[in-house]
Image (cartoon, rainbow, N blue to C red; front, side, top):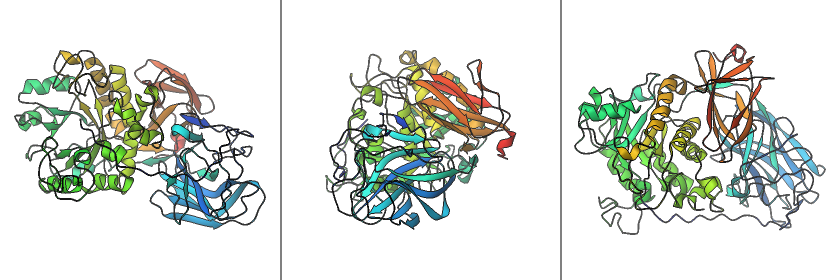
Length: 591
């Protein structure tokens, strides 16, 4: 576990008037999600919404917009924005993809104050779970705003749409600067195209493209342990009883043949003809930084690393380790806080895309004290504006946040599998950090999977706390969590054919504090749901199709009634996870 000072970030917001009174029906975003009741179909804000500030005093030309996502494929038919009485210089509206490509632009003619719809010449297709920006050019400034709609990580959610941040630029191109919590009331008119199948990242046959690699059979979902010692069939058998099936990194005296003969799979950091792939190295983004400087060949505990000493040579390190992997062998790399928090997006994308075939990250949200800082976990959840409170930070849903962010870095989109790390003990030295509990482990694992992780790696070392251990799965230090890990692994192994099956975008959405993913397998639809806040809450889940009259709650011995294609369930706390099976979905036409 390493530490490193973050790369400086510069977020400069446009001038905001310090007016805190909200008028009309505009509701300030909560730390989680602000639901906008009464929004026009396929839009984020209602016609009754009136911005807190009707016109910023600055007359400087500016492009203002909203970053948003959708959980259904569909088309954007129009741009929509609130025009204040002084905002008379709106000239064009543009829909952008996350890479800055203008997907469509339409001129804005003179019109009255209030909400205005500006239709695009043709509907513009967008994909579920992609990130987009809708914006308009205010040539005379005086744009309306609310200074804190997105404050501290709040979002605005309506139907299939979620707005995540206000964006602006004084230059040309996509608005790429954060509004630091401000909303500029730029919206879309969105029409979902209905449920659609989406393959798992990399595709179901991804591992078959490499020599002697991991299985692509539907019943294999990687459940790995980090840096274990395996020298005998008995040691492998202990791990199998917990539901593990894979090893990522091994001690030097480990025997890969023992692992293979036990029906398990290994990704060590050395070449081995019996291995299923090879680890390059761990966390080079943290200990070498994002740069192409020469590398001394030294590792983190032996300085200097780069030449000159203060330079950054992480890309050089990764090129060197990748070159040691034989041709045709699948490569695996784990990154840390550099990729997820500290490096700008383009630098993080280079790490993720240039050096390996499977990638993961290790953010230990439940046990890392420093991760709650604004320049760490706050970067992903509060846009770096503020520290996280313990309730916001030590939260299972944040493992999904890490997974989702790393997946967003993969180019082309969904081109390779992303795995995620979950700690199972007390990973930090001495008495720092915390010790994760069994329910927290289960929730963190499922949050990762719901958000697209194609494998889980357990960090099983106790470097601190009251019981030191190199592998708590095999000794008394793991007595408090072993049964919980076995139970969640058993559940995942039984559901592996479902987890390896296609996602169904545009099938299920919720108005409550949950993350959702839908899957289609052998004629049934499955909805995987995990709580997104520690206080829990009720959620109404709406289904886009089917004629089910009930859903089965898997492994809980209960079912729930479906009325009007919706059902309701309770999520007791931040560790609540419910898995639903839904039949009678023939009219969803997913064949």
